[in-house]
Amino acid sequence: MQTRREQILAAAAELFARHGFHGVGIDEIGAAVGVSGPALYRHFRSKDAMLGEMLTSISETLLAGGQERRDAHEPGEVLGALIRFHVDFALDNPALITVQERNLGNLTDPDRRRVRALQRRYVEVWVQAIRDTTDGVDEPTARAAAHAVFGLINSTPHSRHLGRDGMATMLREMAVSALAGVRPGQQGESGLPAVS
Amino acid sequence: MQTRREQILAAAAELFARHGFHGVGIDEIGAAVGVSGPALYRHFRSKDAMLGEMLTSISETLLAGGQERRDAHEPGEVLGALIRFHVDFALDNPALITVQERNLGNLTDPDRRRVRALQRRYVEVWVQAIRDTTDGVDEPTARAAAHAVFGLINSTPHSRHLGRDGMATMLREMAVSALAGVRPGQQGESGLPAVS
DNA sequence: CGTTTGGGTTAGCGGCAGTTAACCCAGTTG
DNA sequence: CAACTGGGTTAACTGCCGCTAACCCAAACG
Image (cartoon, rainbow over all chains, first blue to last red; front, side, top):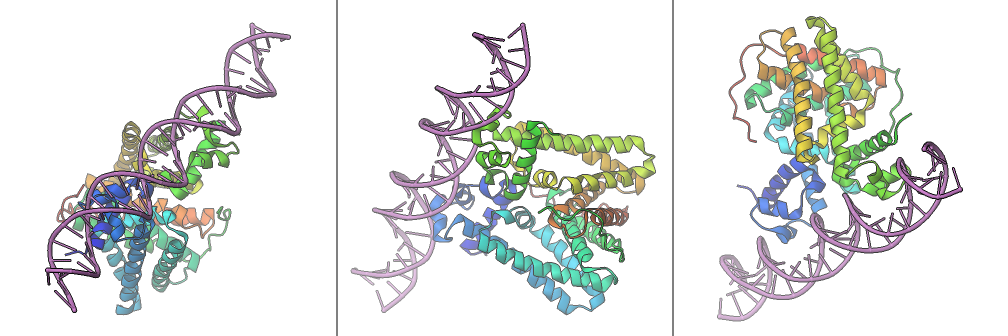
């Protein structure tokens, strides 16, 4: 059973994922849990706060899961465990994954800082695992590779053709292969610097 | 040199990518091109129309590029060409990629249908190329794999650590490896059916 | 040289969305 | 059993946002 807050957050996540943060009204969220409109203010200080809590809790869950995998496995096994973990999370929480990807920009400034910090630490776990697995790969490359694999795994919500388990196996194998394709060596420094 | 419409669309794309469609006001878009507010209505019928034209033109560009690659290469070479093409497009138009990923849901109904149709055809080109390369792989799997690779390549805007060319090489290699990791065979039918 | 036209301006309207106010009412609880 | 409290309701305020109106003005053009 879920507490009311969780119930609301789940419904809101679904809606935010589909229509974007600003595309969803307070009344719709209320309607989705059977109460109408301003009743939500008994549970959350504001709409922004809902998104804030949602994204913070996702990031915390990911970070905690990542650290756990890192601490519970031999260095050579960590990356595989991380992949399994992330694939499962993405497949079981497609709405959350979508919201986290799309709506970082709609967070309030302090919330965004918090979430960014958590995400950075999660990525760091991956970076370490990647560098432990394929040695010789520099840190920026490992970070970029991690982001690329997140993109691959998080593509899940956009293609629900295979069953949940078929999808899981395919994503795991693709992720493993993709990371195996990351070459150590040249820093790749040749293009223009970032714009932003 | 760009026509005014293109200039506006480019600015709008940048803003939509950062703050989401509903997070950007008409006035901000105007300000971004040096005119203020309702001047945009000399060039577009509505804000919705701007997004519509933006996404339609992206999808058309992708589809055209995909078909071109398919027609200009031996069957065995098509997939590689598609990868190069898509990687280049994503790296050179990060804002557009972001908007296309995030804001499909904010399109007007007819526009969304149009864009979806174009996207489907683009995906179909990939599916064909994948099945021609790794034979034995069924269509749903190929489609899911295509989406996964899009996710991988489109992760670009979120990680600008390497230079443009370093990023390009890495993404190409990861994409190739990821697709090489797609096994033919079992249909993966074991999970729950899609929710939506 | 008058006039059409493309592109711009500011003022203002109408609607909607987030939030607050005021009120209500079941349970629990001393 | 009175009183508190948690969770709900509807009405109303306020500010923003998309869009239209009305007006302006340079340059092209017959």
